[in-house]
Length: 250
Image (tube, rainbow, N blue to C red; front, side, top):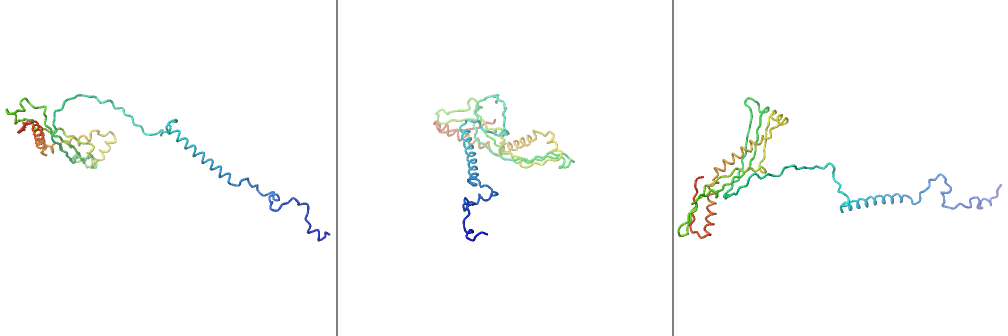
């Protein structure tokens, strides 16, 4: 039997054991990687930094023009094969545009068939047409003796042709279809072939209405007055004290 004094004596078998170094006594404990989890975080930061640097370098190289520009391979392209314009004629103009009228008309045109319901065959168009008409005096039509000067050189008489109205200029940028009704057969016809000149009738009717309105608007009288004022001022500056302007029938 061991003595009680031997129990309190340190043994030499575990002399190399150091307090706090428990990893040597537990072979089943997982090994701790050196540096802990900080290495993975630093690696991720390096990857992100390298990617950002690559993007910056690529953008810089593309800006300098060394590499070709990256474009959308499916981008929309437009090809213009229009032939050069051909000059058909040239003429000198001697018109003095003395007045201009701007007009707007609402065309309500309907084409249908008798005894056929509108839902089956009908075409109604509401078109807002805007256009202008010029009133001019043709100085190129002056005949010999149209300008008569007095003996003392203080007065002059000028005979001019009456003002005329130019052709109506329909402004398609300001004209538009306000509403349109079409029957079933009309819609089927559009799907099959359609009528490319369908709007031409509406345009022509708008021009006719504007031309008629210009005739009744007093535009010619305004052109006569403006031409008279212009020639009176011009000839007065040349020393004529009395200027008489008369108009002859066209």
